[in-house]
Image (tube, rainbow, N blue to C red; front, side, top):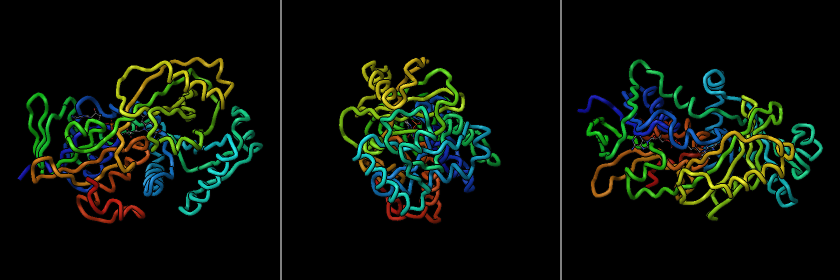
Length: 371
Ligand SMILES: Cc1cc2nc3c(=O)[nH]c(=O)nc-3n(C[C@H](O)[C@H](O)[C@H](O)COP(=O)(O)OP(=O)(O)OC[C@H]3O[C@@H](n4cnc5c(N)ncnc54)[C@H](O)[C@@H]3O)c2cc1C
């Protein structure tokens, strides 16, 4: 019998959330992280906690995800810059106004609070937006969080000594109840969970994850420019589109007063170096909606890589190890919603591993294994 109940490989936001959830369920857990907690995509993303309709199940997954973070808002405000900005979706054409209206009725049907705004109402709520924003849809329950700090907070509590974090543990191979690091250490446990972001595909060849690189940039401090996380309605469709490169207006006011400007998607690109042409497209799109940023100075730009699953939903389940009868648990493939859905992913994993009910609306999707 292994002395530890669960090994979790990967201490991004998803692995940290899973490790905490399993420890809170009473399991002893070792979290093996190659670098430091919140490295990987978690450090690169925007941390927008957004309720998003998309492929079937995505609305339920994100709604539960946003609600789960909101349930811990008091503590998260203190430790991870949780800010209840809400989301403002904007439309810039008649077709997009129709899309906003459709999204509003989808939200209505799911019990998500959302309010349509005319151009005049938008001008009052967010005066920095140009006339290109013809209408808006405000979702007041959405928020933002600083994801790397949230990952630290999730995994750095000991849960009565049941959760142990091992930094600098780069796992090179996994089996049904073991993980081996590249410096030759071997860890054993009754169950193994792989939550290594895009690197999950190196540990579990055969798991089809697609890399989607994104660019972001951040300005100097311009407090009061925006109150909401604002993004164009076309962003939702771009997350599952298969065009090689897409750029959408997706902008977040940081608590520091800085403006975080996104975002792009490039399929199967995972190089770290920024592409100046994409940065120019991001800037042009931002200026189209926020012309006042023309004199803003950009302090830093960077890239990060999202790991997308073929279904568009995260893979959370028990998968067969190639060439053996053994299985390991996986929580990966969260694409651009891994922060939003980290806590609900952990709840799904816990229900699958230890029994208990799956979150409402997700029973059919997650009752069986995805791969
Ligand atoms: C540009 C961009 C913008 C985004 N914006 C948002 C947003 O606004 N809202 C949102 O919800 N999501 C957003 N995302 C997506 C979100 O960041 C990811 O879905 C999420 O961070 C995935 O978390 P993860 O823990 O699965 O993976 P990662 O964060 O990549 O973590 C994986 C961890 O595993 C470790 N690891 C890897 N291999 C090994 C190994 N062999 N052994 C041990 N450890 C290993 C890594 O060091 C890392 O710490 C964005 C992503 C990008 C790139």
